Length: 234
Image (cartoon, rainbow, N blue to C red):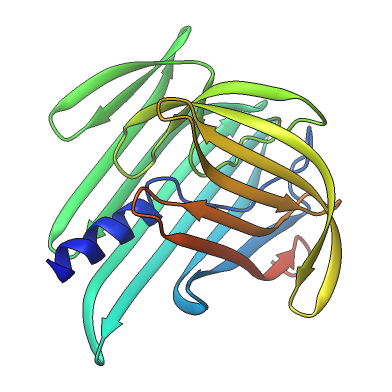
């Protein structure tokens, strides 16, 4: 029963992974970002994203995530995830992801086709709308200045989709690592269940400082900015 609980909790953690967020209508100025993943004040993993500006309005994004949960010094759950995205002129062209959860393996393949996306998972192919947003949240024009925006959210680990709503909640003073940051505050709601699923605090440089994920099991998981490298240092 305990192992089942842990499996469900960690699976929920990466149902919608929080990744570095970009300012509205901007591409990132820093090409390598790292976040810690925390639960109840303890670090359980890391998440990193790297951007490669390939020219012709193309951006290649590489994502790596690693989670380890231990009980009495024994690893009871582990997850390794990697994905690659290709964006052109602000549109997602293709995406592939591989995820190892303990002994299970999942793969997702997405490609653009006319006015829709084709999403392939293990043994299944589905069509998705072009307002699809991957759970990496690397879409540069995703964030809004005010109001709300409805969209279809793609779980990049499983290929599952769900209708969601982004809401800009204004500005807020955020205490983070003994510093006060003036940040834009956003929430995301799961429209199927009418429940809050995410909170984001993004600074004026366009980067996610803190992100919170609320799981179905009542867990609160936090992504916290760790470090970045700029283009010259990358």
